[in-house]
Length: 160
Length: 424
Image (cartoon, rainbow over all chains, first blue to last red; front, side, top):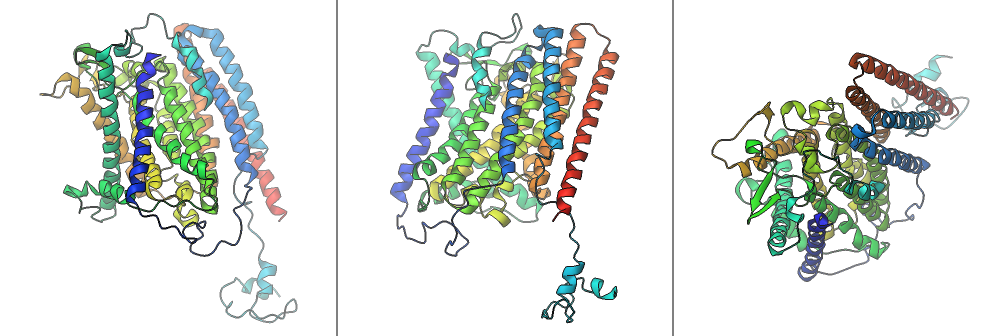
């Protein structure tokens, strides 16, 4: 175990460095707290909503997949280091393991477990364009001021 | 990462009768005063080197990026502005240390340490130099004690690096979570998903190196790369090197994979709420990780501190004692990668998050897994006298089948996605 001694010493030194720096900073730095300073950062405005407690499920799926891969890696390393001694049997064992593992991964990919981002479909804007047309139409009487030239409005109009 | 639990397995289990020295000879015998003093010297040197190296790296990055953008960069503090980082660091000491209302006070204080201490510990297993002249094995003599020019040489070696980079994920995740603020939370959730994704690719490409080196100890990995032709870069066939380099960039959250700190969307990312010294520790950890990760790449693929050699003739630098030569080669190789990382930052735009995840999961991980199996097959075939061509053909055919299966899965998922998209 004595091979690990220097690592331990370095860890202690690093923690000490951090702690001593904190003490130094506390002595040197001003301490004038205010309500504005200790509010959560919100680009300069007063926060109105709480921090979301939930985030998309894709992140959890990635985390679970990672655990799978981590286990795969744990089994690969002993084989990788001793591949010479484990020979043919070891190779086929690890090969079989990898195939089974790869198949589950393929299934996960096919199910869309690793798809991210917004759904990639261009929306049909024809009806929308008609609605915001600068002209008054049969579907809406609201005239959108300032929308001239900003929407592909001619699409819906010209077809008539 | 749980691989560190494997440590126990390997201690008594290294290849028998191999010429590699396992462990640092300094710590083999009983611990007397002399070895302890050498350990103390080495710890101090590594510690100072770590801090000074990080200072240099920050300056180097700013200066090189400035050069690439036709600016001058830091040029006031010290010659060529080299003391700019020191000045910035001292400034941070004098800044008010804020603790947000919503923060989880204990975790908020703990997180910088979780990022910064592992960054330091990675240094301990990197071979930083050594005497490789005249067929020596990198062992130098300090104060009459034979030792390696690396802080510690445990048999688990490279696993320590993986374990530390996993702990660093906790630092970033907890920093964002404990801030009690929107942007840090988003940044840290992104960061942890990104880091664990690329850690899988990193680990799989590392397995290829372990197959060719047959040991986990970093000095053993260096010892197995005696000549240019036996650098792992060549023996593993370049692909694991490329995968490792990309995965390492993502693991470091450096551009083009710096979505964690995407200023336009996330302000400062996970460290938005941090100020003063706590911020300095995160900053330090980040740049120190850049250096250590480059050093790991050098160790794993480019022969570490070994001078480039063809056959039995090694390149030697004249007028430099053999014990220093290793360090010079190491620094030269290291600088290539440090420059590479800065270059990436100055050149490439940031990836989108789905592109990032697709690159990690759907490109790098399957490639590195397939390449590992290919290497293992070639090695097994080689040691059992199978026909090389037959082995390669069969392996390529099976990998091709895997590729077809995988592309089919991608097609199925994208069709499914289009259907879902059409419903909106």
